[in-house]
Image (cartoon, rainbow, N blue to C red; front, side):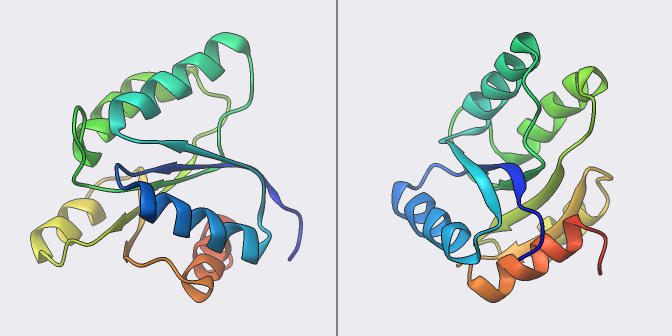
Amino acid sequence: MNVKLKCVLLVDDDEAVNFINKMVLMRVDCAEEIEIAENGMEAIQYLEKRLDEGVPQPELILLDINMPLLNGWEFLEKYRQIKERMQREATIVMLTTSSNPDDRMRAESIGEVKGFISKPLTVEKMEKIVALHRGEN
């Protein structure tokens, strides 16, 4: 693996999924730091805290759609409100069980979303996501 990402943020309300995703990230050895938010609201609060502290934002966000408090779509609305304060936008990839073509089309219509990947996350999928982040695709 080339230079590691400084930070990856996993946003999913399923503890088992977060555990597996973290293991995949560790296996690919692509991130120095892996953070987990269990819903969109927690993720926004995490990002705002990093902004307030002057800490660099995650470079990659893997975002689920169906979550309590703020779902993935609502997260994206809030993210747009704070991204102007960020030095650099994160690469956001929807990581979901949704097979609804409307969700895929909606994700593709949102400029901040760079990919739409079906769960489960695998080493191969993660390698493609990292390549996407680096502009290799």
